[in-house]
View 1 (spheres, rainbow, N blue to C red):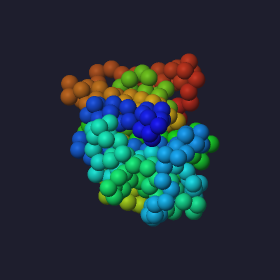
View 2: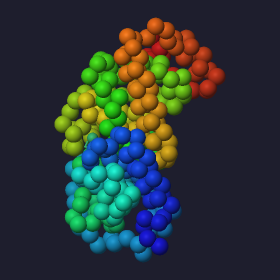
View 3: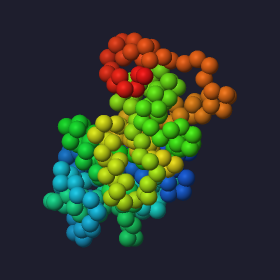
View 4: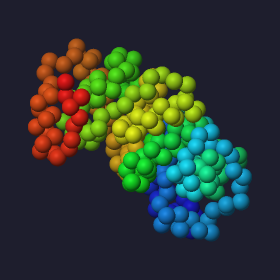
Length: 272
Ligand code: 13P
Ligand code: ZN
């Protein structure tokens, strides 16, 4: 048995391929991480090498100590993951303190985890805490239409949430807590990681202005589905704006009726 043949790794590779086919991952754009379950870590027994050196993460995530993450490599093309998993993705183990990681499988030839590993890990840390350990996935994609909207709409969570909800009836059910917005920041460091993870306390979708989208979910399917739904909604909005804007739409009261029937709580701040 090889690591690439384990079900959770095969599933991760399929999702990277699906995301590439969506057009969200030009060149090395975007990066994915998955917090591996205890049962799946057992399946890795005998297939990984724990003797590598630790490297500082750059941020501190104590509640992720000793966790294992499947993660894409920095500078690696998502398009190539399916062709050569060991070169383009890897498994990183977090140390006792939650301050360092080591590569125990993959990312061969001195490759490193994504430069957004601090943002991924800080978001995982927050989501592990607020979901009682349920959420295991963070995806970052360069979602074309969401990025386009960040040049046109005010960079305000209330506006983005309401506009995206209005573009497809299922949106408030898929992301009832709404979307958070990080203004343009230099990517790849601790500052943007802190900002993103702060918003992850409230939201499962966090938009990086003029850059892309971070989502969190319980499973790879749910996180991918969330990214897809938000991006499709943005695509509809781009079309609507290109056709001269809305002539009619879903109203705040319509959303209240929807919330009742679908048993979701929609924060009143978005129903202005
Ligand atoms: P990486 O190649 O380091 O994953 O960076 C790509 C990216 O999207 C940065 O935000
Ligand atoms: Zn990016």
